[in-house]
Image (cartoon, rainbow, N blue to C red):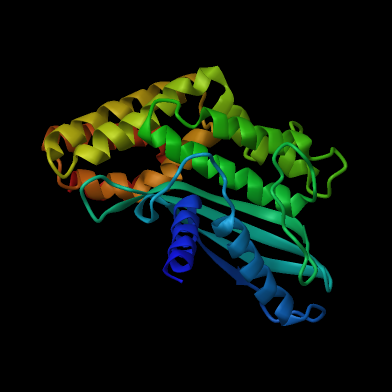
Length: 298
């Protein structure tokens, strides 16, 4: 009997180590006329189980190492009891070394996604194969979040996961109902261009800078805040160079959307020279948000 209990404990322990994600999933559906509300309850549960119970990598993650985040699906229109339009907000969160602080790693709103879903419909990993648009979307963002997380711990460490994310994108047929979000011909902020930027060699200074921002900057802040801030200033200078070469790129906008509040909070307490440097850098990098940065120079 004891051997049987130990056997099942080993299985349980293995399963706890296996999964990489801890994503909070919510489906927000206003009162709709055609769809049964239970569909959205099932959708929320199915997406949560898909994200959090799937083994996505060959690495082992302790429970405290899991990549946390959130996925909010907001139904904005309904065409039929199983056909909808949704805005999908994706966030990834990274712990900061030797602290209870977490930093927003990825923050994106994917608008007007045409979602086909029936109650109890399966969701499957779309790793280089096409099953349906929703499975592709979720798989795409999972591998992208993995790439972002690995990039933040080692230089270009997320390359293999970005490549898998690209394979998900490339497998979506051109006649997909969401083709505009997956294709070269779509808007410059769509999924195609997001992945193009992340894998394009000319954006490697951006990816190197995200590693320096997290691993060399934020992760040393608890032990040596002056050194950490100095690293962050050098990262922002490098981002400024990227912006000069490739203005208004989608990866840089994602960085700013994720880090804006954090940068403001960190440099409110900087030296006068540091405050002025950061303020002037952000004036070039994030000009539409300058009213928010005014607090830095107070």
